[in-house]
Length: 486
Ligand SMILES: Nc1ncnc2c1ncn2[C@@H]1O[C@H](COP(=O)(O)OS(=O)(=O)O)[C@@H](OP(=O)(O)O)[C@H]1O
Image (cartoon, rainbow, N blue to C red; front, side, top):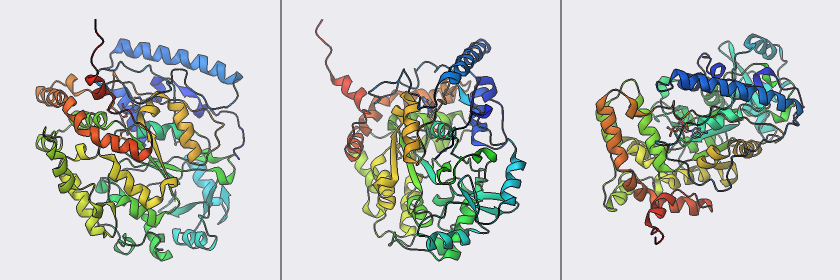
């Protein structure tokens, strides 16, 4: 059970300006930098934003004094959250309160607390082990994960995530991660980037992945020897440094550690390797209208400081108008190929599938969600994989975060604050000075109706798979509805 405790200042909302305070190496730092440093936010707009945020803060603090700590549902939330406004024409979101998610307060104190813990003692749900091998042995002996481990490593203390948001990329994963991190029983970890593993530890090339811990290609129930698994977990956990003393006052079994690795969803190997390494980890998948997801990724690529034209032009090639193209894509890059789903596929087979996906039309194919989702469900079972629709997250952020929190095993009696994205400030390549960028983006945007049609059949498949209408085809459907007679 989570002990009720007064809201600490770090849980209170901050103004846009203070939320934008840079912080070393954290995911939030880059988010904040993104919010702060966006070129289009004019000074006057910023002033208005800051004033608005300050007003929000005053009202909020007054309200929090009165309000019980319950789930906060947005009054603006709509019941049907199937589509989002066109990200290219949507007005900027009002700047909303953001919890200042710094994991920097009292790091020294935290380190000392962990250091002074007797082995196998609890600290807010974390249990100290001398090594991951010891953790694995204890978990096996106790027939379940022996709490979340905290293990000394190279002068730091590291742990493992119990919930991982695996993607899809550009679907609001950072927003969800930052919202969950507001929960007092969540020790969120923003892994330090490892440039050498651009696609993530569990998605890396079999050439560099530890051979003895590799997916054997046949048996999902296989148990790796404790020494091998211990070594693998140590490598995996290396960037997940235990955060500061925010776990204080939380009863042991409730602590949840979350991580976000949006590149994992499209990986063919990550689900199986993760299952082998952390069979109990909970998986969260956020799915966004694939057309909007595509343009978001394109915008991100075009807004990068250094744009590799050749790469962008080939990666972001548009589908040909003919439907055959889809079959070609399916056969050549085979996210549908049975072997690529993992049945009897070796790590080398799966890597070939992943490479195929990476080589051509990647951003386009990443929007074919069904086979990707099937791999995760096949590896972990449906009950361990939660699918969140991005449009619902955008329209009902607090409610959606509460649902994810419940899935993660967290008590619901907590208020989440929306992490709002200032759309006007978000990168729009058309505002770039470089005419090549402007032309490239505009040309791709002209093909939007074609792209929507290309995804339509697959979108229906995803709706069917999830037993819920995602609404991603609404725009093309409405285009066919004849206007009412004058
Ligand atoms: N609350 C809310 N409302 C509307 N849109 C939102 C919201 N939160 C995140 N987003 C949009 O999600 C996109 C970023 O997704 P990710 O955080 O998953 O990106 S990443 O993969 O981690 O780079 C990025 O999409 P685009 O703006 O279309 O590029 C964000 O604007």
